[in-house]
Length: 461
Image (cartoon, rainbow, N blue to C red; front, top):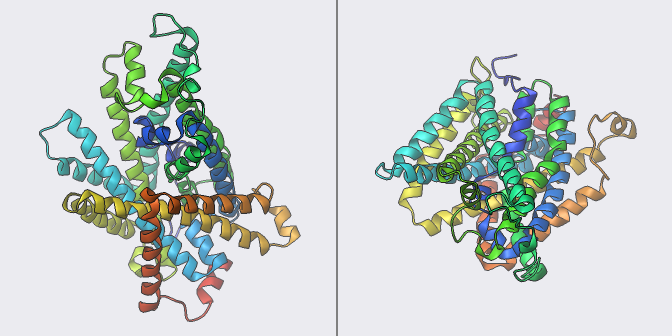
């Protein structure tokens, strides 16, 4: 390993648990109340439809990642197959996307710690969360992997316990004086689809944002010990874990409680465990929510560091960020991300809440941009292969190219829905404006390559 190489020190168990925990966020533990109010019990359909689209996107990413496991993942593939500008936009867009998301997660940690320690100023908890997650990332990639493994395990155990306990209530009447609750609530309060197909469509953009982070699996390819084995295994489990963790948990919650009452009396997780006689349920769920937020922040710092490292390798960020420590950690890139997050934490307390909401809308648009770039890069990648080369691919996209086009059409539908609904329309002003700013900087700072040498070198690597 050269002085500027990343360390391949992530084991299969690290990546599998990261894959499992990547798209399980704070929202699920707080009941996904807003999305449920939009679609009613039919929100499960939204998660299944969105999950199928994510499965195709991840399969496309996996095809490229197994063939060429590199740092930067989809930014590098956009660079190689769609051109330097596409790689630059994808990389910096994803860097900023996670910066914004991390600020939100750090703020969440501070809010939930405030439930236990109301007299401690929130900024102290926000700073402590950033300092601890930043330190973990700066030590070694193995330290990051270990913490993410345990963070993910806590979330997964909680959800599985919730599903098991909930099924006990539904079938055997546990916690309900032995009277089985059944699943009548799924259709007895205005029907399974109380707001019609429009409610399902309206919820899609919220559902897709919930899946942000699952593409992080691709970023681990550059540091996985055996990417040809671990990446396919992690991706193949995507759809099934969506069914268990999102659809399974929501099925249980909406069977036990009327959908139109969910979120009005606190977290359904807390309510369910309390009915089973667990008096400390609120404290347990508060702890789980904090670990979920820390997990997202931990993964976000990892993502921003690797993306900046990849951009620097291609001359699209200062060269200092392409250097790694003796342990193979891109320390300079991580430090910049952590410093930027410090500014983000400060801004979060200085600017009005509405302005901060506008900034976070970049994350919604940025997620869709990232997924679209993955699909476009995979289509271009596959077109450049001969029949013999396609036959040698260790991991292939299903139903190529139909599946890629269908997933792309679905993303276009989500963008159209964001434009239709006033609440989310702001994302389509801020997101493209941010990309225009990046393009201006790209040419103003003379980042466009004088020739295609950079692309040629990357393709031969």
